[in-house]
Image (cartoon, rainbow, N blue to C red; front, top):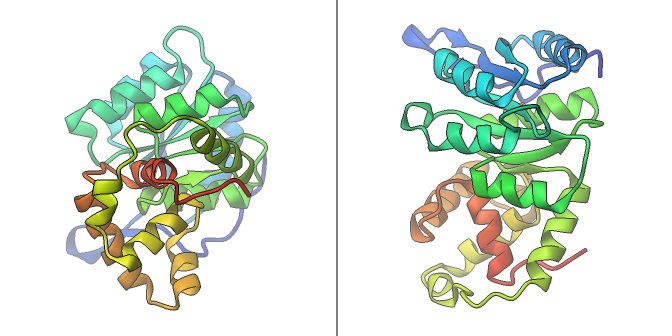
Length: 239
């Protein structure tokens, strides 16, 4: 994976005094060549900065605590502590509450996706993604949007629809407004905020307000949990 895209939809955040601060990214993979390739892609973006690299899960947790990145690009299969357990430890650390994990894998294996979600990951992307898609995924993840490769999202939906749902949250859905239910369904289908706004002909700001209400009403930690809530509620069907 080489090269990179422009900074469209940039992720620069305002620091002290209003100075633009690039989004901080930690790269985790047991293959040095791939880490270097990822560093090239990320490093070419003016709104992104690689703040560290790690070759296994234990080092990833240590580096995350030392660098406090905005996003961790996390490999799954690594020697010793794997990426799923590293994700679980990072997401459970109160000191890293502002850090989000985007899992990268060569595989679409279902158990990886489900375990990554349960561990607290904000998204799951395949390593064969185009550089511009990877960069966009980092920015979207930092903005709090769950990100799944289309093929993975389809399999995830199929799994949740086929699985029994004894705890179907009908009561929770009754607390939602009709518009919030619409937004939740679109989140479950993997749409980004701007896509939801276009589909419902509302502003992105209004979409964000609805999402804030959904997180509170459904006691969801993040957008990934809203995706699961949409599946469990039967709001999403296989495409």
